[in-house]
Length: 396
Image (tube, rainbow, N blue to C red):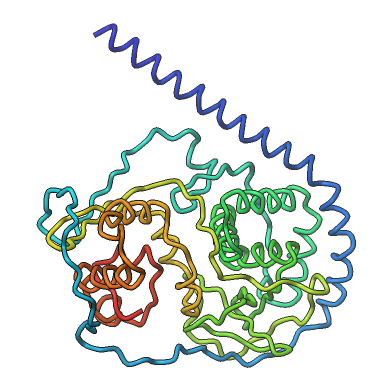
């Protein structure tokens, strides 16, 4: 028993000191980042802050909000069938023990001891990012007015810690390979960790995107603050207003009101030519892996496909947008490797037409068809990995 007790003490001690070393390392990384970026960032802000505040104070205007609707497309009740070439079934693939269901889920990820305490990190879809500081901001009581928004900007723009923290979050977003919307999502997570008030969260994100030269707006209706972004593709089922032929979409938060009777926003830009928030995903985010295995049956053979559940969670909160975004997003490395291993022998030596026919056969026979309305309760486009993850898929 005493040996077990001694081992327990040793194990616990190693965890405690390991956590302290890890935390110290993260803090040193943040301090190094501050030294590298301070001068460049200060020069940029000095040039823009005072001009923006002067323009902001006089640029408020009332706008009419509209709701963007996705064009309704009729869906077949039964899965469409495509005639394919008859291909001899000469290839043999090693059989994997068959599961009860065509789609069976198993979580392969085992719990791991945390390296830093929950209060010191941001959980971003299973990837933990060190939080070097808390950001207490005493918001004014009239935060939901143009004066309150002006005061918030003035307050945070003069806070060196906040500005360095925003730069640190942007650096982490770049290292994770996030697109612009991914950066917005990371800012939402960071803001929620630092501010209890959602209006403060929205203003923090607005400020962070402004100083990173994005085309964003904030607005208010007399009671609530709103965050709006100009995106490279349309968003659907989302409120927006138009300014200079550009659409600004409201970024959704949990406590947003269902109806907005009046709405005010600013015309002022922080930089001369701000950039749109890109929704395109050219490269997948580098999330930590939480592997889920799905099983499919093709020509009587059961085979596994590995999927990163953290990526699925990211997609689940992605805004509804144009089909181009979904079609152009690459398949994850995990899923692609699983499919390649299984289908390589089927596709070997085949013509391009035959390869297409084999893959169409897989799509029709292995992935069950159902309309989005029945599966999700509303129209929803899916990314490639989501098509493999969910029980059903429709025409898209």
